[in-house]
Length: 618
Image (tube, rainbow, N blue to C red; front, top):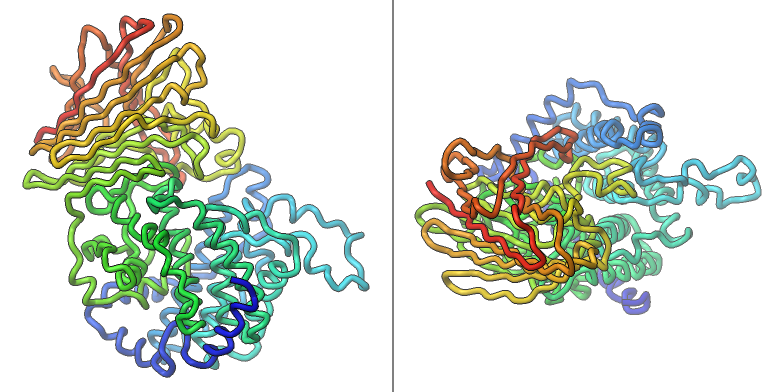
């Protein structure tokens, strides 16, 4: 929509209703929720954190911490303190809304806000780049009123935009409860760090992106503008630009609604799309409704397609393997799209689970939560999804023996947050993942640079795919899988992929990987890899990745579990197994052991095939 189309809706709706609550209902809503039984566990989590934080000294973002990323390339040192400050902001703001009589919470909130307003930048050092180093003294002049646009003031990243959103929403919710000096400074800093660079500076790289940066940055700016900008013409100018970026974000999805960035980036990116779209719909009296799009509807359904059992997800790409549900977002989407599934309440994310402490998510997990919907939540049921555009097959099979899941993927090796993982697959039973995806590693400067595929979790060596003559899959859009066929039936699922194009080896004429998933009482997966080479290969290794140490003490090669175990059947005359213990640093910097089961083909030929049978046994 352009400015002229937006203006009438903004002017007409300006005084009709508040954005998060109906006019005059905010105080009574918080009072009711404070004592409502269904909200009790959530409120108790925030209150417990609030009481603990009141007795702790506020952290400081020092120059030394800021410099570590440039010197070492590591992010966690600065980010731990940065996010601790956001936790304090969220906690004291929510407690001040819940318990307005508590002066200590309000005082702590004011000090936290002031500290955040004092920060050199709201960006993370990893996202600032060279901008902080690019300003020379000669660029500044008393006759140059645009000096605020130069250097680091220009940078808007995910977290600076989120901070602007948070402060704009908090100042709106608190209204006259915050001192005028603080309210004015909050608004000034949002204009100085967000609105002015956005509207007066050069375009940002994320404005035409098709991934989470587009929705989080633009959505946060749009949300902040909807809260703070009263002039209809100025607001329309901001929203026109935001909506262009939201169109780009949606272009990153195809008709299947999947994001190849992984489930974690779905709820991050799409969550901020929803936060903005909700405020925009309310501010325009329903005249601008981004939820009317069928593509948006399909994106909303992606969550329920990703889960295997409980909180375990199909974690292709940079996604965590175990993620709880943001129930506020889920309940909101279900009100718009009734076919969005409501999961069991115990799968709800806790207040402290989001280590980034995103204000918009934390608040809406409370404000959008509905007791009646929580009571209607159910376990994940039997379902099969083939996401044609993403080339993901996900099959969840539930019976009296348990919940079993098989997932496999095609795609290409230049996807957002890419891993070199064409033909990779996951096997899961009753809360345990036997053949696993490692998910995202510890984010560093090198992780997103030229050394990305030296990290086990990103390289094909960290996935259940072949290694041919010692060479793994290669990165780049030209290295892709070809889906030869997929069929879904009540008792079986089939998927056949051509993977020769993943390796960049001219000798490899064909690598056909076929899956057959038998959905019986104890499901069985059969897999065959068939090879055709232009000349005889030296070595073929079939690699399978597990987080559990395999048991090779008996006749079978077994991956043990608490309830089920996975047995791998193979031809011992053709294949020789070898267990390799590896390790990687997970997203939080914790070293994790991982095991590669390497089956070496004893007699590789120009034309050869190998078969495996993976069967569950209790």
